[in-house]
Amino acid sequence: MTTNDDIEPNNTPNSTNLTIVGTTVKNAVLKGSVGGNDSADTYKIRLDRPAKLSALLAPKGGDLDLKLMTRDSGALIDLKTSNRRGNQVSELVNSKYLPAGEYFLQVTKGTNSTPTTNYELSINTSNITRAHLGVTMKRVTALEQFDDRNFFLPNAHKADFYMGTYINEPDLLLIGSGGLPNSSRVFSDNDDIQPNFNVGKNVDINRRQHKIDLYVMDQDFNLPFLGSDDLGLFAPLNYDALLGRVTTRSGAVVGPEGQTLIAEGGGNKRARAEYRVDFNTFAGEGGTGGGGPLPDRPINQFSLPMVQGNQQSEQLVGRNLSGILYGDAGNDTLLGKGGHDTLVGGLGGDTLNGGIGNDITYGGAGRDVHIGGSGRDTFVLDPERGVDLIKDYNDGVDKLGLSGAMKYEILDFQQEGKNLGIYAGAQKLAVLEGIQRKQINAKDFVQVDFVTIGGIEVPYVMA
Image (cartoon, rainbow, N blue to C red; front, side, top):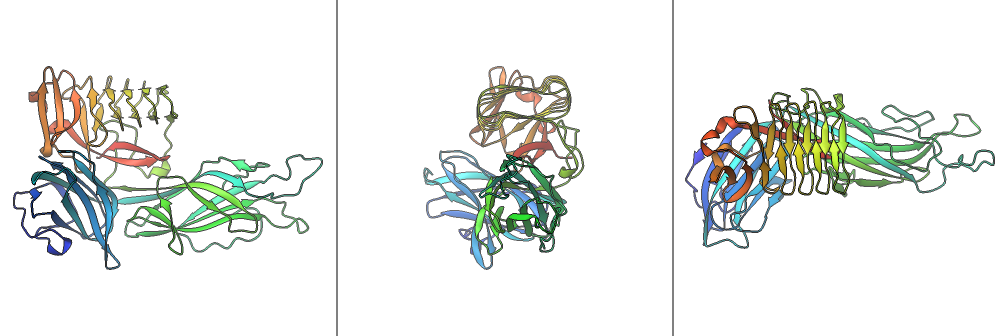
């Protein structure tokens, strides 16, 4: 879909003149301009079922911003905003979950905008076929003494924690001793544990609000004169899939998904839990055809070897198995060795070497260097993560991965000596070393998506 008619007036959601109808929008590229008395262009998107959405704005001159909005309980709210500063800097908004309804994409003048700025707006939506909600208990700490001291057992006064998570289950009734379903093992005589206990399940894609119940208990002997297990924490929560945040049942905001959140107390004794909520949606299923180890089954049904870095520059080496390498912060070197690996650089200027196998490399933030090695590899491009150097692109074998609204139709290519630069508007994405312009066409590109595993955004090639 391509249009050149920026139909005015369309400055507000109440005056939109172009409506994109239907859930699946592929390769939609809108062309318009903003400037002078024309302060904004607004486009309506009408979805008849839950969908993922990605939109990429490529200004052709000045500084423009991009916003995704909807009406919630009658009020117009912002869902996503991208307002990076600088002329001809692309703006990207992504939403992993939009329920059926009406939404608005708005292009506005940025701080540094010239009187009139032309743009291309690429939009992609895709039907959600599956959704998965997971909760990880990262750390549990006693805030008071749980048990009595014992002369013969020096650690007997410390807690014997176990914990659990319910997702979209009836209200809990915590009684008796011996634990509950969906509970962890007992961590004996320890007031500060890091269990990394995870519970996840596939959830109804038509359901926006999801109930989450967290509990932490201290195991006692189940004898009448010693009493029942102590409840150290009970946290009844909600997760809002549209807004991507966790709230209490009364509506108080706790924090966003994907970040470490804290719950305290709620029982006859007091404990603190650090936890993370991860929500993933899938449009179709991932596969191994374009590289990477993600299989075609729910995320909680597989376990991938993961090698994870820290906050320092270091070298990470794979295990000759299909797995994930994540550099985190620092200028890291990642070597996949054998297997179909996914290499994620994280922060810093990283070097990613897939080694043997069909690998995916994703640099993350910073100026990264990609080496696919042997096999059919996929190099993921990102408009917000810096200019990457791809050293061994094998035309006809390897692929370039585009996420969300990034489309071949909005890319520009510039021959730079023996190398080929790839641009989205005026923003440079990557350099293909030793590649000529005539070698690259639409067949070199594949669509990728991301899934959150252990709090890490991991790319996979869509089937």
